[in-house]
Image 1 (cartoon, rainbow, N blue to C red):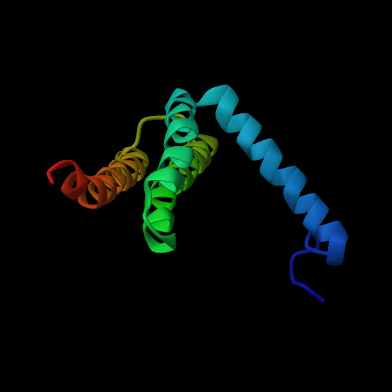
Image 2 (cartoon, one colour; image 1 turned 30 degrees about the vertical axis):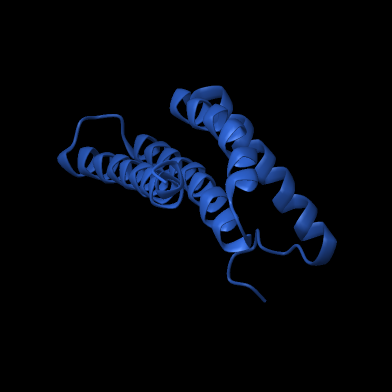
Length: 127
């Protein structure tokens, strides 16, 4: 038996439940996070562009993956902020540092995406 009594789902029931939870998380991010909405709008443009501009599967995966990774990190940052706020809304150095670290992770993911796109596409433009 699993030590967590809430982890009793198996098979397709578990998959369906996980999909419902994921959809609820995406709805929450869309509702409450302007940064996620902005990054998602950019992703709607860049994902098909990355799939089209990549010369092969590896380039397509790098261009598309770098954009998707920004969304993943933004969702994790939002989850971190929610968890910190759940513990306490009082200002505390550790809470502030935790949120700053999450923000820094988003920044690095954006830099990674921009660098990936630049390194793959700029040489083509400079030919």
